[in-house]
Amino acid sequence: MEGKHHRTDGGDLVIAGLPRTRVVAVMVAATLGVVGFFAANAGGAARSSGTVSLRKTSLGMILVAANGHTLYLFGKDRNDKSACSASCAQFWPPLLTRGKPTAGPGIEASLLGTTKRSNGSLQVTYNRHPLYRFLLDKRTGQTSGEGLFKFGARWYALSAKGAAIVKGAPTATTSTPTTTSTSPYP
Image (cartoon, rainbow, N blue to C red):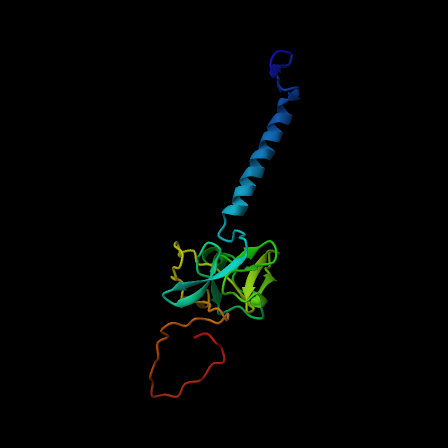
C-alpha cells in the first residue's frame, strides 16, 4: 500500500485503511456536526453570559445585556413565564443563560433569576420579568423597541428596580367615561 489511499481490486477507494463508505459517513457526520453547531449559535436567542447591567440612554438608566444592548419586558408575560416564542422570539430574542445570571454594576442581584422556556432553555428574569433583546437594536444603548405594540402587547425597557419605563405615554381626553385597567402596561 503506497501513500494513504489506494483502490481495491474491485475499484473501491480505500483511504488510510478505511473503505470509502466509512470515510464518506465520517465526513457527512462531521459536516452535520459543524452545521448544527453554527445553527444552534447563530439564532437570535443565542446564549449569553447572563450578565445584566445598567446603562444611561435617552430613556434614563436602563437594563442592558453584557454587550450593552437594551433589555425589554413583554407586557403579555405572566407569572414569571414567557409568552414570546416562535416568530416572536426571532424578533425579540430572549436573554438566555447556561447558569446563574450575573449582576453587573447597579443591578440588584436579588432581583435576578431564571425561568425555563418551553424548549427547556433558561431565560434570565429581572424582578420576575423574562428579559428580551430587540433584533433592530444594532448599537449599544439603542432603544428602538421601547413602547412598541408587537405580538399582542407592548415592549418596555426596564429600570434598575425592574419596572417598565413608559416614556411619553400619550394622554387622551374624551367626553365619555373610560374603564380603568389593572395592567401596568398601556
